[in-house]
Image (cartoon, one colour):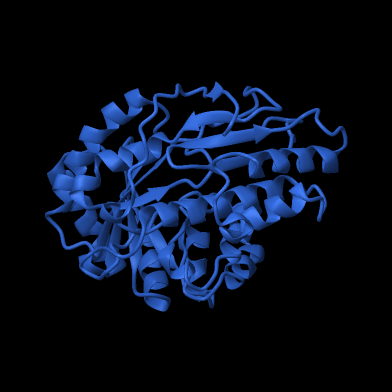
Amino acid sequence: MLAGQRGELDALGHLDGAHAPMIAPILQLSVMDRSIVEALGRLPPGLVPALDVSAVPDAAAAEPARWGVPLMPVICLADGERRLAAHGATARAHTGRAVVRLRVGQDRAGPDATTAATERIWRYARLAPEQCDLLVDCGDVGCPADVRVVEPRVRRMLDWARRHAWRSVSVAAGGMPAALSRLPTDEPVRLGRWDWLLWQELADLGVGFGDYGVASATAVPAVAGDRLPTVRYTTDDAWWIYRWSRRGGRGDGRVADLCRTVVSTSHWPSAGAAFSWGDHEILRRARRGAGAGSTTNWLAWSTSHHLAHVLAALGQPAHDGAWHPVVAGQRGHYDDATPPPRGRTPRGGSARRAG
């Protein structure tokens, strides 16, 4: 699930034709304007996003039905009848599919009440269960204690989900802290990927995987003045956060030094720049082949590498020859991924040298 930031959309736009159909991003929009339509139009063929417009007025929620790009609506249990009708119209105008988003922290009614709410969705949106992908959204999962609390709740929700003929069922969570400004600078800082650990704990249930990319599941305002060059680099069980402040002095020099540090670590992929578009851009800066970029660029490179890493970790199609669809972020199946080691990094991270 992505906030629809320009850097995230740039990363999606650079996916190749082989990877694009394997990813189904949810874009959480707070505004509806022409720039969103233009950005969606630049996405590669086969990449079909889902739009969560729960933060916009009811009148604007009907607009995606008139857009000429393939997409899916995201439906929430609390949506009113008018909005549900708009979601149904959007689904029929494009893909014939929708995403039903069930929030672990907010939608905590019993199974019978949840069934009544979903039947109401299908009735007013005029959709069948087989047209809907269920997304169980765990929100922020930032430490081992969060994993222990959330896991049994999710299992109960998934027990309920078996009552219905969903097109697919996925679990999503976010493990990135809401703010990075308090982390040390000029050295890589390791943060545990607790969202990935949660999904591993649930993998016996055969659910799809989703996350919030390299962003936090908790929306917070950006810290004023914190524009340090920052790369969030995904590895098997952790993110390595690079925030560079003094080395190299000027912006180009700082970013070049940051990128040289990334490419010299043990977690730099063996494929190097070929691993993802983002890794290619990082190597270019390490060699001073391009300028420093901006916060948008740094987010784009980080997101691009993250998408490639998660797809590689999830592996190839499941042994039955079919993908287990995921609507939240990436699609794949745990049986084909190599489980990463389970660290015990505290929420604030630990500063240590990468590699």
